[in-house]
Length: 248
Image 1 (cartoon, rainbow, N blue to C red):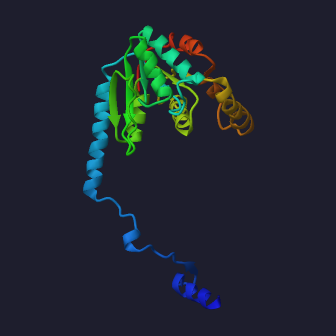
Image 2: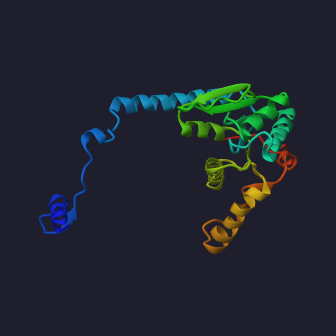
């Protein structure tokens, strides 16, 4: 054991000119190291990112009165929130709104299904994955993206209301990003509607008790940046009176 310890000290313990000891970490063999991308690869990646933004904004410029749906891709057609999302999509479409989703299954499919049934524009902004997330059959206008972050910008770009149904980490990430943009004045104040009191109440109670009352890391007015409802009808009542989006 002592011989092994001495060998390790000789290999990885060094000293600087002033006699301070430090540990030199062993390097992985060259064949196992992740090589940084070449400059030309970075350049072409930037061009691809720019192209996705340009094409995405051009695509969205053809629509108006958009409402973006967020929520889990895993909820089945028999689930209550799938049915509520479908109902809301149909109500909005019949009122002249364009429904935008991520184009996948679950809540996204439900929103698109309702919009199509209501005779409206049903948009899907899909992500291209190695396992291939197929765009759902209820999308009437679709666009695919290679990068998650460019797709995320497009989902947030022009909607005059955002609807959040129960979902996973991605749904929470998208919720907090929009709320932060409104909180910091980077986006105008528009309806942010969370559907499902049983799902969302615990999070908002934590924000109230811990973030606001205990730590005071948010302001009381920040709790008014979103609405909590339990039905498609309640969500529709909030969204139907919203103003057109004037800036991004």
